[in-house]
Length: 339
Image 1: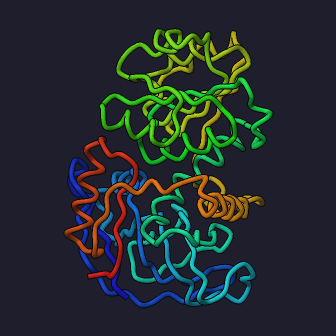
Image 2: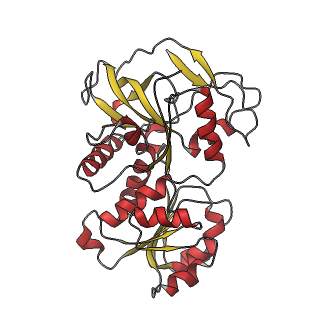
Image 3: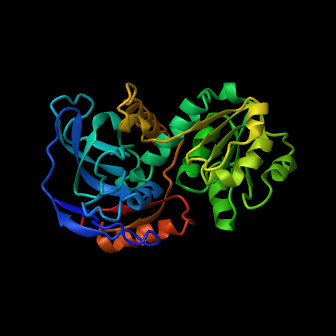
């Protein structure tokens, strides 16, 4: 099979040094599926995998978490899927990624592809959506019942990115008042189009802008950018006994305001369940199926914004160069064939 990977870390300010290689087609065992990859999307976590590669590590690294494709074989312990099923998933950081014609993945991390969208639209969703489901429902313990969330609000810092685009939709779907942050006209428009009730500028004073909306503060904060940049502001904005979740680690001390307000602070990393093989790992399968149902019901839409075809060294370079600008809106997807 054809696969795209890199042997050297290279310059981390540029796209990974992808090259096409030919590998043996994997054989699924146990609870693993073998999926024929039809579309992939790129994520900052792929770049972080590259950045963590040691300079003297000359082994082949294959990244790429988001995949949409078709099951072609199943391991002898599989029970959730069969050959011919269309699926989508984000996989795990503990195994080779999906930048290959065929890919092995544990079925407990896989969901049925939404029927109403194509493979490219589906590939834009898994990693960001699982992150959002876990952050909102597991870490922040937000109810899925809209009636329970009446009068409650959430601030999403970085609302126009891949995770933010899904978080805005789902938070709105479960009845929260959504305040998103964006700093450019095009990102403001994107956040509004995905359901944000209010959009404020994260390059200006967040507390002042929240007060300008006539609000004393918010019940929840979901931070999707460098948390250190917003620590003081979050301490001011969060209401007493509120909850905050970040997808990036803090390098500086947590705000003392969190203590005085009895704030719950949590991290969200989508790979935790798969890397540590937690007993509830199958929850990601359930979340992706829930997402597929919402997409097919017209309640959630794909965050695909840029698309390249075919999957090639040249197009992977373009996609990752765009990702490195830090100005990506929504998701970048590549669709097969592999060339």
